[in-house]
Structure formats: structure tokens, C-alpha cells
Image (cartoon, rainbow, N blue to C red; front, side, top):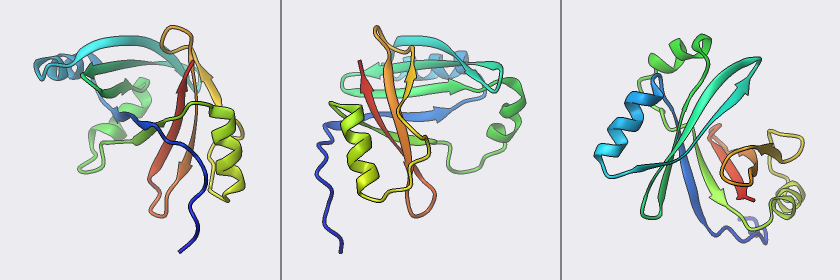
Length: 140
């Protein structure tokens, strides 16, 4: 077994779930006691999607609705609706360097900025042995 890299992962930051109707999904999670703590639009290949962060206690679920042309694929999934697990890190650039030096398969060429939360966030993803996506995220 290989030696673990020296990266502090503070906690699971959120679990990302692609949905076909973000309004209906937000209502569903609100019935479970989650509150909408952030809502933003994002660009995906020139079309607009919507992301809502639902929080209850220390648990955050990211509900995101992709643009219309992507929704049919999401709607027919039988398993695997959880798209990614995000780890909270204190310094995204340091985490990127450590992960890169560790030889992991990084999807993005550098951390990506999103205008989420109050001051934005930066993230990048790696893939696991079975193609699972693991996101490293810093809320700025």
C-alpha cells in the first residue's frame, strides 16, 4: 500500500446531486429540514444551469439542474444520482499541488473559481479507480 499524501481534509463539504427540477428537489429537501443557503446560476457550454445549496446542521447537499439538453440523461439514471463528494480544504492551491504531486488523475488543469457563496469558491476534481469524482473545494 502506498503512503498517504500530506493533505488536511477538514470534512466532507457537500454531496452533489444532479436533478431534473431544482425547485421540486429543493422543496423535497426542505421537508427534511434543509434550508436553501445559496442559489446561483452557472454557465454550461453556453447555456445556463441552476445550483442550490441546501443545509441542515453540518450537512450540505448541492442540488444542481443542468441546462435542458442534459436533463434527459439525468432523468433516466437508475443508480448513481450522487455525482460527486466534495472535501473541504483550507487552501485550494496547496491542495492542488499536493494532489498533483501525489500522481492523482486531476480533471481540471487548475482550480476553478465559481461565484458561489458570499466571496466565491474554488474547486478541482480527481477521479477514483471506478471513475467516481472527488471534489476538493475551498469557500473563499
